[in-house]
Amino acid sequence: QHRQCHARKNYSSLLESSVNVGDAATDSTDSVDNDNNIGSTSTKKKKRMAILLCPAQFCVPLDYTELLTTIQSSSNNDNVEIVATRVAPLPRTEWIKVAKQLPTKDFVDANLSVKKTLDWYFDAMEVGLAELWAEGGEDCEICVMGHSIGGWVARAYLGGLSGSSTAVYRLAQEKVTSLITLGTPHTSPTTALVDQTRGLLREIATSPSCSSQTLADAGIRITCVGSSSLSAKLLTTDLEQLIAATSYLPLVGRLDNVKGDGIVPVDLAFMDSPARRVEIERCSETGGAVRHAHVLPTPWNLLDGEAASWKLPEDIVWYGSPGVLGQWSEYVC
Figure 1 (cartoon, rainbow, N blue to C red):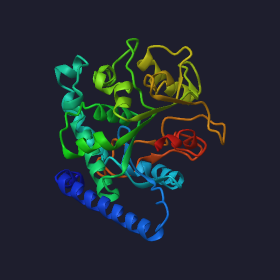
Figure 2 (figure 1 turned 45 degrees about the vertical axis):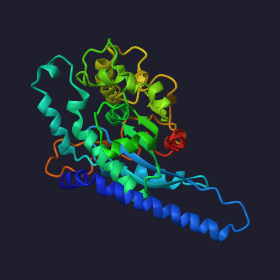
Figure 3 (figure 1 turned 135 degrees about the vertical axis):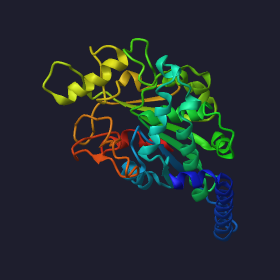
């Protein structure tokens, strides 16, 4: 928490550093080009990318280390270089801030304000963005990646619902070129038995500034990734199908012909065109079902808010597993 507050107070210095890094990188590259290409055409420069990951509820940065390391190592090629990665610095203790909305009339009426309720999450995103530009230079483009709730929070930020007017946000409007959501519910249907986001998702889904067309017009390529691996049943001895039923039923109000990743029904996981739709049925390596997450969050562990969540068994396949990652990672760049 101290780290996040300290970083938030130093947006200007971080951005100033990123300018210096970017200028240095450009000067260095230009020097090499001039030395090595006298009398010949200059070598084409690689596109420089950085990734900001917006975590799922109660997940922490350590939960995504392997995913980001794999993407960074596998995505670099002759045309693209991923120069930095970050997870929005959110210890699980930050989620306690949502509790201040619980006794309000807006919560009861399912009319919570995105700007007021999620300001702490938006702040963490800006800390992460500032750190990316400080490390990689402000010339690098940004891919914002959101897992579960992190996907629609990222969508809200890019659509301006944070109300931010910082230098970080202004630069993000220019440099964010890709949004990828993993197992994110993008709509809150009227058939839902309960509005679990208490109006937050409805505000995002119905805001013109957050529509796929508006974001695409701003130069952001959108890719929504969802799994259709798991069906749901209430009367069953299969624990996984039972868990899926307790999640799908409140979200869509039915269980017939509903499939998803065990938490989010696949019908909710996609934005309208021109957003790209990547529906994953099975892991291409094992043929196994693709689940919502690879960890079990530990919201009760408030003594160590940054400790990694409980990791699920190795045979649990999720969006970042081998055989699944390759089905969508090409859209990062």
